[in-house]
Length: 340
Image (cartoon, rainbow, N blue to C red; front, top):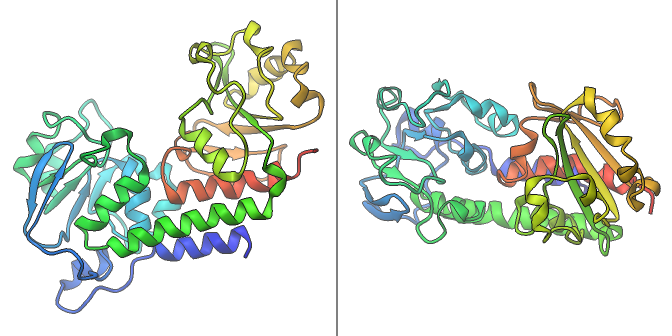
């Protein structure tokens, strides 16, 4: 099965199916049918405290668009969220109906009046760990935060399993995880040439801010490249890179492949012409992949080709199953074309 076919398969997991009889029009549009595995009332504890959910939630406010990938993969449409959900078109396209309310980003993380006007019976932010920050929201509806045991550092798998229990969609959550694992296993099988080679993934932020290594040890970017089959960057544990890449540090890079996310078209030519970069073995061997990122529209192109990726490229690396599939769809064929 090709990567595109697998993308279609995973997208089907994220599509909402018609609701079961008796749930009302709202529920049929906003949630898939209940699986019958969660008993309500449900008492659940997250990082922001214990709540009781009297019955299956129907109108859910996604208090942070960072959860959009997980909602879309489960087929749950939030009634309201912040405007930055538009950064993630791969999630939006899987919602069968439009989100009723999008609020603008402001100084406050959660606009209580707007959230209350959406008449939610549950408010969700699976990255929230501070009970004080969501305290006012508790007067509107129960608030579900990050998984209790892992907090904001938990994986998307931890978060989707928590949502699966709350929405009575645990089987669907497990299937999303299984399909995700199968997709990357298939990629590794189809591209054995990735094994035994390493990637240095660098972001060029511009002449003022310089560049930084993104696939450091334990990072989401490192995890994604290793899922594709690559070895970790030899520089992944170099803590000096936390402050950016100075000229003297370029000589420490020894990855087989150099991937650069270029966010400054005007300054990139001078940056890349640096003799220290040109002397890297990956560059001399032509194993360089430059992705030109438009920081306004969040689009990515390569070598002037039509844009193959649209969305928030930086966030996609640590976002969730649908975003990771989008990244894999972009990077896998480009990496496979590099010289060996």
